[in-house]
Image 1 (cartoon, rainbow, N blue to C red):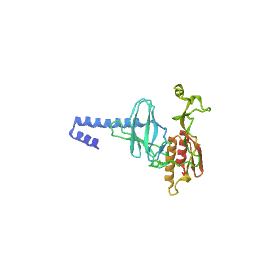
Image 2 (cartoon, rainbow, N blue to C red):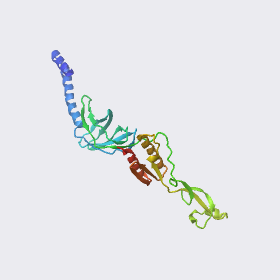
Image 3 (tube, helix red, strand yellow):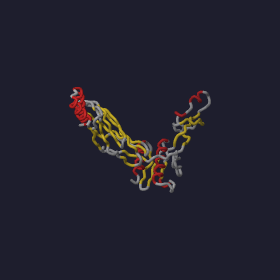
Image 4 (cartoon, rainbow, N blue to C red):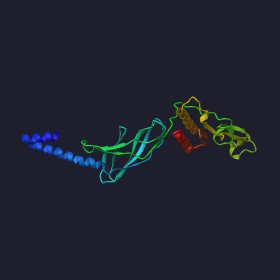
Length: 273
């Protein structure tokens, strides 16, 4: 409409500069159509990784944006639920873009439809497209807000500290016994004429701890129980304990390490879903 008014005014008053300005703006608009379209066409977007998170955190979905053309792609924006994630991709290169998604509930989280658009080069026009990446993220239950204590082991179960010939922490000296290892003898004391003494270390007894659903208070709802068990799993793993997990219809044998922690958190995330 603006160009039409300018053209009518230029014809009516025979304005040479008006013709120049009108046709210059019109040609700029036509060239912008081409460049805006070219900036988005033939982009290749493939899904990447999505690391597990806890409920209430932000899940980051990685997308690989590949530009196989011979010119740069500038001012590309990926929109998810009204939040923009901009990126630029050089010619014959690729870029990894992380799209944030709020993880509100435990279980599998899939991103909604993502809009890819651009207003390059002058912002007069907008080219867009939609993608629905085939990817998902595992959301663990939210750990309890308070540092809940681990349940006490039943009987001899659990992990306890003992004074033995271990090699964890130095605990003191005692009189030498024939069965003691020569490596634990305090040779400096023997050299000073103080007799043979043996170094005593405090070690950890290899015991087992069960994180049992049935030991939780019955007045807790499902999500509160899963939240408390999640906190216990994290605490037991941080302390280096061997622990097992019991859920209705499921039992994971006691173990330790990262793989066991991830297996327990996965079962808690997907329980009842």
